[in-house]
Amino acid sequence: MSRGTRLSRPPPLYRKTMVIIGDSYVANHRRPTEETWHYRLAEKYQMDYYNYGFNGNALILPRKAKWREPVIERIDEMHEPADYVVVIAGHNDANEIGKPGAVEKFADGLDTLVAKLRTKYPAAKIVFVSPWGVERKGFAEVLGAMRERLPKAGVAFYDAAALSGINPNDKEGGKAALWQGPNDTAHLTAEGHAIMLEKMEPFFNELGVGSL
Image (cartoon, rainbow, N blue to C red; front, side, top):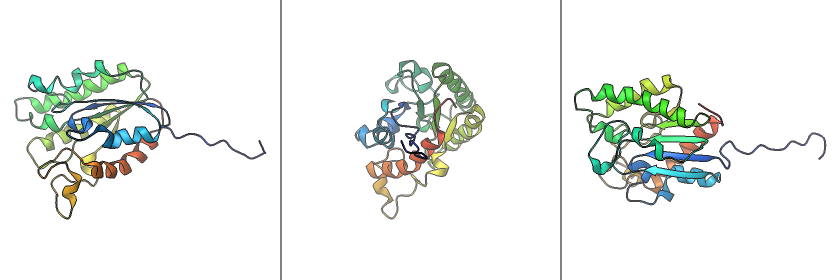
């Protein structure tokens, strides 16, 4: 090797392990998982990828049995070890917020979920991605709790409602093509996931490796 030649370092994500858990956004509802930004991110960097998305699943608040127990109760099924642990849910919790004490239970549950993930994955980067800013009852409370609790918990938090530029309430000017149906406020098409990949790839690369 000649003097002054430097070996380039591989990207932080290269050949790492990602586990992702959540609701139908993670499962990709009626479309193939391979269209999602997280699958495509893992594929690009030759990551090992484990997807635990389930349609109708909540993050913290219990729902009917057909939607399975919430994410907070499902983390034991997730593959370990992992370098990146990604949690995307909250849309279905918003539907339960009207019940007495639900807002407090959801907020406190976030702290408990983070603690459980840290115990299971002490060396991993833990990443939460918020639901969209849907203009329906319950979403403001869910987003408010995530914005308050998750940064304090020291995990990486991507506020998709504020930062993504994708608005589920706006279907004008061809933007309906980003969603799996005309009334859909949760599930992206391949085109929508491509936009999210442009946002999430630099976000993940800036995280580096090691615990957070």
